[in-house]
Every structure is written in structure tokens, then in C-alpha cells.
Amino acid sequence: MLDFISKGGPILWVIMALSVVALAIIIERLLYLRRISIDEEKLFLRIKTSLMEGHYSEALAICDQNVSPFSTLLKVGIENRNQPEYLQRELLKDAASMEAVNLERGMTTLGTISNISTLLGLLGTVTGTMKAFGVLGKFGAVSDPAALASGVAEALITTVGGLVVAIPVIMFYNYFASRVNLILTRLETQVNGLVNLISSYSDKNEEKPSKEA
Image (cartoon, rainbow, N blue to C red; front, top):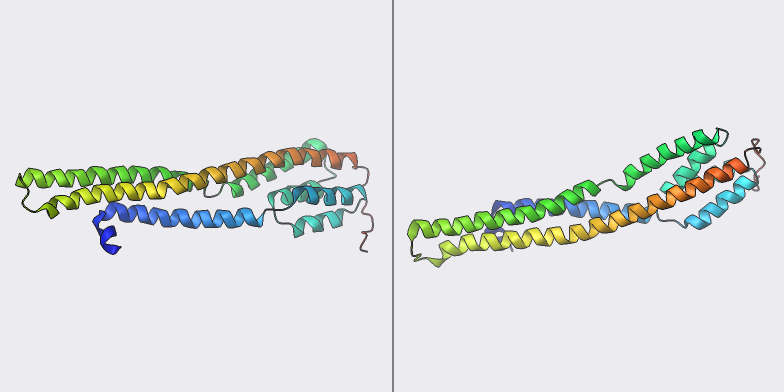
């Protein structure tokens, strides 16, 4: 294995380093998406019930127990329930922007690695081919095939290495992008519903005793 890697030259080592970075980002993003995955419909119904009954502290406690972008926005909306509706929307938009940053963290790096890996593989192909032709140009008829094979091996190995890294990274990038877009679309719809809900019960400004009290 080490012999195979060494034949790829320094470019293959760079590709391998990028693959390690990509793997770390992919694992972190998978764990993050799993952590924030909740039953949003069930959570929204629980929050709605608490708001309708005026149990704002209970609603906030429910948000704290569910870590997700949706629960974060719900909390912002509840905490600013006494603000004018236009201000509530602005605050929720700001909070959604912050959540979008968290959701898209690492995406740019993944996209860059997928592109760079392919280009590095192509660069290795060129340098390996130049190395092989350099041997031919220096010696004419090659008496030692191993000298020529070294350049050809470098060209092929770096090409394969670049593609092996780029293909799965692109697949995960597209998967994460689709998940992020879906979550952000949901947030926009649900936040509008939250603002309308809070506005409908804006007259309930005084905290009512919680059911658990």
C-alpha cells in the first residue's frame, strides 16, 4: 500500500490530505443533522397548545429541550411575543440567517475539495506524463522499462486518487445541500405560521400558571 502511494508522488499526498479533511467534515455534518432531527409537527403542536393557554414559560422550556434550528426560532418568537409583528419578523429573519450559517458550515470547503481533487488528479496526470516523456527524450529507446513505468504509474495513480476523493465528496455535498435547502424552506413557512399564531394571542400578555404548577 505504501509502495502504491509512493508511486503517486507528492500530488497524491496532497489529495490524501484533502480526503481526510473532507471525511472529518462529512462525519461532523452527519452527526449535526442527526442531532437536530426532531419531529417538527409534534413540537409545533406542543408549542401551539402552550401558547393558546398562555403558558409561555412552558413553551420556552419545550424549546430548550429540543435542539434544532426550528426550536431556536420558536424560542426567539416567543421571547419577543410582545413586540410589533413587523419587528418579530425581522428578529426571526435575523435568527434564521444565523441558523443558515450553522446549517451551511463546511459546505464551501466540501465543494472546494471536490473540485480541487479532480484538478490535482489531472495535474498528476500531466506531471506523470511529462516525466515519462522526459525519460524517452533523454534516453531515446528505453532499455529499462521501470524508468518509463514510474512516470506512467504516477499519472494513472493520481488520476484515480483524485476521482476516488472527488466522487463521494460531490455526492455528500449534494446530499447536504438538499437537506439544508429543505430545512430552510420549512423554517420560512413555519416561522410565518408562528408569527401569525403569536399575533392571534397577543392579548394574552400575562403569564398563566403552567399545568405542571
